[in-house]
Structure formats: structure tokens, C-alpha cells
Image (cartoon, rainbow, N blue to C red; front, top):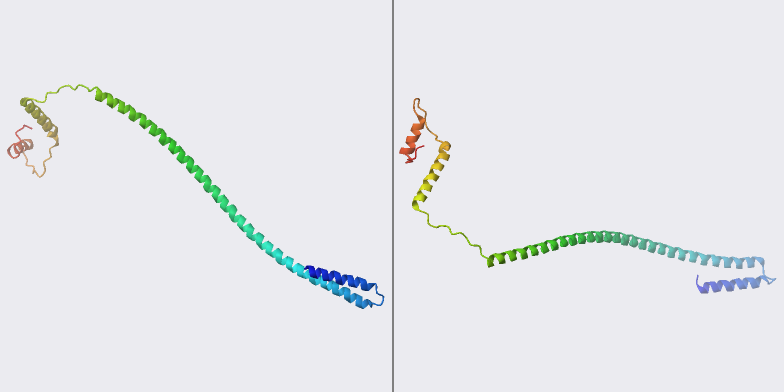
Length: 191
């Protein structure tokens, strides 16, 4: 309701009130005047109600929009808190790993320093190596070669496998193989 509408209704009401004191005024006319004022008030009230309903609907829509935004922000805040908690856990893990690595680095530094000290001492105080004769007599070498060959032959004695031989009755297989080794393969060592 605008100020001009309110002012008009007040003036109209005052005129009817003043006219009601007039004796010459017909009661029907007075009632029509009152009816006009009530109709004007009713019309004004309807416009106000319509305007208020529209404003309330707008406020309700705004409230729903704000509520949806608040819910979205709450969800985002919850996700943010979860991610922040995950980051804190990850940072704690990295911190623990860093502490372990730092401790291991310190241990390695001490070990390296200790080894450097020991190497320096060894370099400063060389150990005297016993002199080993470089020349070994050739007879001794031949004797060692023969002993090694004998041991090799003995170890292979039971490992020889011959295939493709035909068994003949009454034949001495062991003697046949010995002669084959001596005659064909030129192995003069007695097996």
C-alpha cells in the first residue's frame, strides 16, 4: 500500500465521518460511502497480500538457494577436512621416513669416518708381506701334474660310459675297453 493510497483512504474516511453528522444524508448513501471505503481497503489489502506473497516466494526461493549453497559448502568443507587429514597423515609418514633416513645417514657418516681412519692407519703402517719363492722347480711341477692327472683319472674311472658296443659271449669287456683306450685313444695310463 502506497502512501497516497493510505492518505486517500484516511481523507475518505474523514469525509464519511463528517457526513454522518449531517442529518440530511440518506442512510443508503452513507452505507454506499462506507462500502466504497471498505472496498478500497479490501483492494489495497489484496494488492499488499499479492505483493507480500510474491516477496515471500522470492525469499523462500532465495532461502532454498542459500540452503543448497550451504549444503554444498558443508560437503566441500567435509571433503577438505578429509583431504587435510590425509595430508597430515602423509606428512607424518614423510617426517618419520626423513627421521629414519637422517639417522641412517648419520650412521653411514660415522662408519665412513671410521673406515677412513682405518684405511689411513693401514696406509701409514704397511704390513710386511712374506716373500714367496716365485720359481718352482720344473721337476716339482711335473710331479704335481702327474699326481693331478692320476687323481683325475681315478675320479673318472667309474664315470666312463661307452655306447654302441655289441656284447659277444665269452669276451672280456674290460680288457677290450682297455685295449681300445690304449690303441685308439692313445691313453697309456693303466685303468
